[in-house]
Length: 90
Image (cartoon, rainbow, N blue to C red):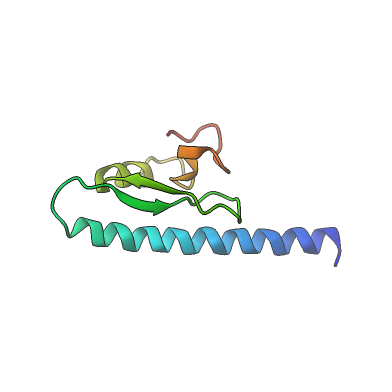
């Protein structure tokens, strides 16, 4: 396997993992929105580190604020810094 092919394969895995965690987080958010209160829910990091399994406790309101922050960055990557650009707000 060439370096280019290996890099492309790794990027594919990273993209797939980020996509899976984003869908899982969206499902958690939908479930959390059905409950009353400002409970903390565990959401998965969406950074570009394929080995990352960090979870972050957020309320639905905090999750929505980060998901809709307008930077286009994975929302939870901004919290712990893996894969986040410097423009992402924590």
